[in-house]
Image (cartoon, rainbow, N blue to C red; front, side, top):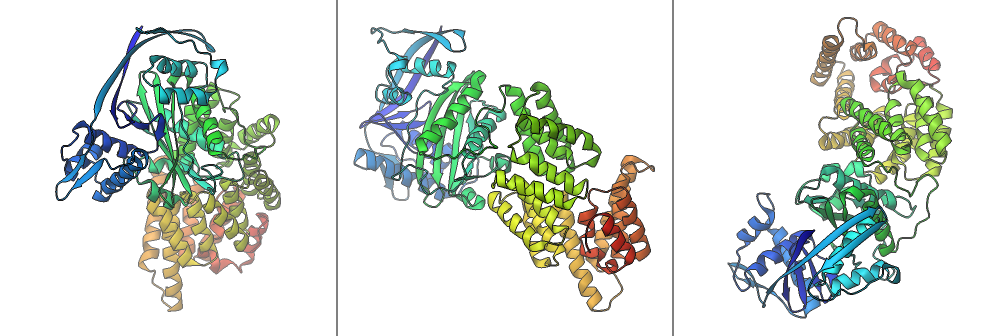
Length: 626
């Protein structure tokens, strides 16, 4: 048997839950951001006493650097919410001193004891011990909404806290919720683009739980053609304390942001979620859900389903997106998520780590389709894994041929492994028809188009991909590459600088930015008739020299990664306009069917040999035109 208690502060029909950090009024949950609730908790601890702005900011934000405007905005929200519900103002400004709470506050502590005997996943016996007689209740006779309203209006009854545990055990996954509709027709009216941020945590909830719940919500939202949902993997950069939701929403170019926090006490979890409109800053919806860590799949599915119902979203389920949980194995799902986040960054080390996570997920659940898709994405970047890719793709086609990403991977393999550009294009078109919001398929399709000099079509695909995922460093980098091939160097420098500023350790973005800057200086130098290399060109060659030294040091004189070595040598020869060496090196790369050669030969560095018959012959072996 375990003891439990809940602490509240009450005033004028309001009930401030100090444990869950939410505010109720006459049984209705009021929508407030977490910081505003924390401010109210501090002010009501000493009603009538003046608290300075500095003291409030220290208590609520701690050591984090925030502007005073954050405090003022939250005070404004508190006054607006309290005034609308209570009919008067409760927070008074004392000029040059600070704020104080005006009103009588009652401290309430409610004790109860609950015993849980779980005999089966879908069965539970709950015994309530208290002085007053127990009230018989029947889950079959009430909706979840009825249960939620009972908890809001009769929260003193300990049975409701026990009921929350019962619901979590049988898989419903939540004890109470309250939707706040700000518009007629549902809170989601007018929302076309949305981002679900990783949850913040209290009480030791680990990262995997925070990310899994956010990913589950985003995945369910993505089941409709009416919503564009930002990839969870792209939002890890915003997993920071005291984040500015409206600024993040503007950066992501979305209409609304889902934010929230998760509290953990042992294996018990409480999740509080909020839907915020970016344009107005209004809180359109909030919900509170209780569950258990060992029933996380049921909890996250229940949260997503309830949000969909409460927001009034109209779903036209896509054929290629499954609504069921992707795996029942929690550890496999965690490895899958970590693999996705690693793959999203695309660096060599990150991709290798992504592969390890996907392989572990598949080992834990051999039928985990999403993990197999993730592994196929990774393996597609290295032609030495061709047999493994083909095997995976055959398995995926047999399991579910309606998955968009299967065709995107097939298109990538046909294009950059086989140099069968037309076949690759057909696969990409099929992938986009199955899922118009597949940003990766559009990005890879643009790669196919840009190396074939179809720049305008590639630009269209990349613009759409960026609209779907505006913070994707790989998409920004590829957009910069496109404009470099197109000889639009100012545009190229802009997008590559954007990518570099978002992820400074991204090798592709930083190296191509150096290429663009060197190319611009080379063109200026040649126009002036100067033979001496510019500083940017010299620095680029020096960088390639260092990379060759690193390859030698890593692989020895045998140059195991001979492709990289020859690619760097081809670049160096091209910058110095050494026609014979350049042609020899790219000829070697073509014979090896080098994965990166189509991109390399699209660069302006090689313009000086484009009319050479040997160069044209190499392009023909790659099924490319000059």
